[in-house]
Length: 196
Length: 243
Image (cartoon, rainbow over all chains, first blue to last red; front, side, top):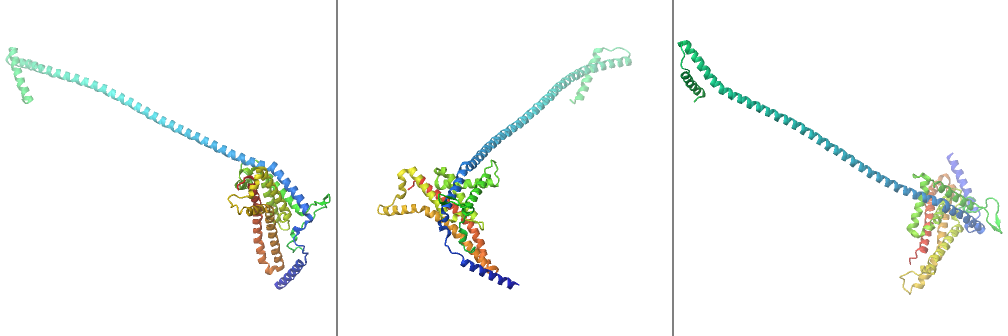
C-alpha cells in the first residue's frame, strides 16, 4: 500500500518536473513592456486617489483625535490635581476643626472642673470659717464656764460648807472667814490637781 | 505551466481591453491588486477615525501607525518635513499593503514589477529635486560639493556625488523590486520542490517554504519601511542642506 503511494507520488512529481521544464521560458515578465503604460496609469490613479483621500479626509481626523486625546488627558490630570489639592485642604480643615473642638472640649472641661473645685473650696472655706467660729465660741464658752465654774464651785462649796456648819453647830459663822478657808483649800486642791 | 517560478509575475488583462489614443490602459491583475490595497488602506484607516477617548483595536492600529510614521519623519527629516507627512504615510502604507497582499498565495505582488517601483522612485526623485531647488535655488547644487574635501580631489568627488544622486531612483526602485521578486521566486521554487519530491522528500523544502514565508513577511514590512525612510532621507537632503 505504502509502496504504491510512494510510487504514485514519484510518478506525479516526474510529470510536474517535466511540465515545469517544458513551460514557456519567456524570462522575466517584468521586462515585458506590454502592460507598462497600463500599470503606470493604474498606479497613478490608485495611488493618487489614496493620497488625496488620506491627506484630505482620514489623516486630519486621526491627528485631531490624537490631539484631543492628549489635551483631554492633560485636562483630566489638571482637574485631578486640583481636586486632590482641594481634598487636601478639606482634610486639613477637618483636622483643624477636630483639633479646635478637642481644645474647646478640654478647655470647657477644665473650666468646669475649676469652677467645681472653686465651689468646693469656697464651701469648704466657709465651712471651716464657720467651724472655727463655732470652735472659738465654744472655747470662749468653755473658758467662761471654766471661770464661772470655779467661782460657782467655791460659792457652792462656801454655801454648802456654811449650811453644813449651820446644821452641825446650829449657828451662823462669819461668811468671809469661811470663804477664806474654802478658797485656801480649793487652791491647795487645785495645786494638787495640777501637779504643782 | 504553474510550476514556472516566474509565472506568478505575469500581468494579464481582466475584463475588456481599454484603449485611449491607441494606448493600452486595460484593467489587469496588477491594477486589481493596486485597487484592493488602496481600498484596504482606506477602509482600515477610515474605521480608525472614530472619535473615542479609549481607542478600539482598529483605531489603535491607525493611531499607532500614524505616530510611528510621524516619528520616523521627524527623526530623519526634522520638523520641516511635516507638510510631506501625508505623502510619506500614503507611500509607506501603499507599498506595505501591496507587499503584504502579495504574500497571499495565488495573489499578485504589485511591487515586484520594476515599472511600478521605478515610477514611484522617479516621482520621489523629481519631487525632491524640485523641492530642493525651490528651497535653496541654485544653492542646492552645493549638495554635490561636500565641505572639507581637498581641492585636488574635488572634481572626482563632485562627479561621484552627481552619479550617486542620479542613481537614487534606480537604487530605490531596484531594491524594492528585486527583494520582492527574489523572495517570491524562491518561495515558488521551494513550493515546486515540495510537489516534485512528493510525500517522501518534500518535507524539507516544505519546512523551508514555511520559514521563507515568515522571512518574506518580515521583508515585506522592512522594504516598505526602507522605501519610506529613504524618501525621508532624500527629503532631508532637500530641506536641510547640510553639506
